[in-house]
Image 1: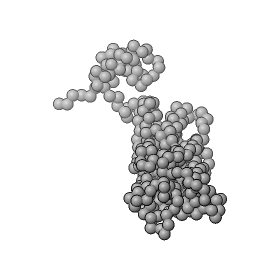
Image 2: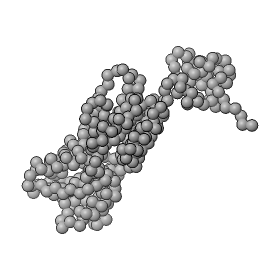
Image 3: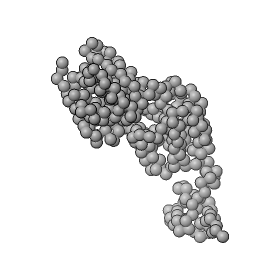
Image 4: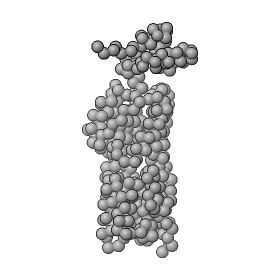
Length: 338
């Protein structure tokens, strides 16, 4: 017969304290003397006692778990974002329940529905334009923080990146560096970040007038679409002076296509990206980009969510708009003005 599981009563009996004292000691309550807390923890460790998560949730009305809902789990952006989120959660001894809805609004609703009762709060990244009404309806009635999500009002805190300003800054940098024929590789059509980056590029190029020529190519925020765009540029009668990709993954794909064809970067064509993923500094030449603290974005959003959970009645900030900064590396170079 299998040995019975160790219960909280076994720990209390062995430590010669009450069940309530064991519960308070193991759950970090202040009203337990430190020697007693140490004794209880030592006994629990020796007996290999593991608190029953469901029972603890019922007694404390807390799951000690937070939900993270993302459109995808693939790519360095999401990896860096999760690094920031996980760091804060771990430091505060919270668990994470992470799920992806693969860009499907109905699946997102199903994921959020499945998290009801299982988490105390949720972080949601939903970058799709024109989709916020459905998102708000899907959100569970618990503390929620949105990341990179276009929201018409300030009903929920949103932590995001100023994509428009970042794209304008990069386009101005390329023009100021002497590049005049500039190709832009865009992101998914419905993606709000991609729309704002394209808008910033178009506005600066339009303001430059006849002295600048813009070329626009489609992309999907991944290496493959960046590589495909690079091949499309190679098929043109003349190469552009520079390529500005709406994210680093596409910039790296384009860089690879150009280098495969023997095009020298930046001597013949400059390449720039957006996000400053870790890989951007380790390719050759290293990538000029707009730096966004992706992990920092996750850290700040998670910290804010924990604040909402700990003090739901307090007045908290509506969120934060992070302004990216230009990082100039080897993939672009100053040209003599024409």
